[in-house]
Image 1 (cartoon, rainbow, N blue to C red):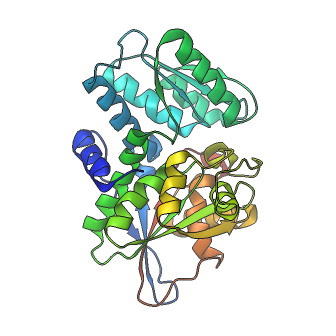
Image 2 (cartoon, rainbow, N blue to C red; image 1 turned 90 degrees about the vertical axis):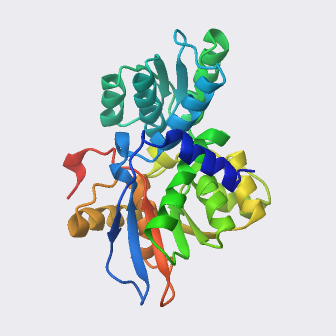
Length: 311
């Protein structure tokens, strides 16, 4: 299971390479203070850049990052963007496998970062299998989208920043797909007695299905957030975190996610992709109702969306 020292080591390793993203104060909700952690302002427009830097820098320290074979990743788009960006920064090649359904805006940005893009299958699991085959064949460093300790620990640095930025923080609201961000946040939150609210699309309930079954299980992948939260099952790190300390689990439907995304743009000019809007949707649609006096941070984790779809 991921630990606080893992996240603190990641913070030190990636210092000066990632942005310390700001907080945006939202209107009070039921007497609670609600703040948005603007991780959509991170390099590449997504929180995953933190984990990508931690993974590749740690591998380079161990002599595992070859300048010729570089890295390989499988992604719905965002993990690929982050790892391609970091690989370019470190001067190594990147190959990224994405589903054929990956948004065109993400595929174009991957190519702009210099990555070789391979579109395979209809969902993340098929892209993942192709990436593993590429790793076996070439020896490239595999950078998992969410279920590697260094990837999740890098994401957890967000929680360390939140503790410094928001004294008295008692709740962090986070979207869950494969569970890497959740695992990183939980490693810090559990050590500081901060509650975590885990929000999932009802059409891809990887964590809540695992909690109900008592183990990770496959779920169907569909809905508006499938490109960024489209894992078939919760990863090992996310499940270990949930077993150790069960989060407050919330499901939101597609209509609530779409409405939350629209509200974020209309009222706050936050350009959220649909998966990233899921966390805020839990509050805006009332599936999660804060208590009076709570200090809540909602992580908005990505902005890689077509601006033409914001209204």
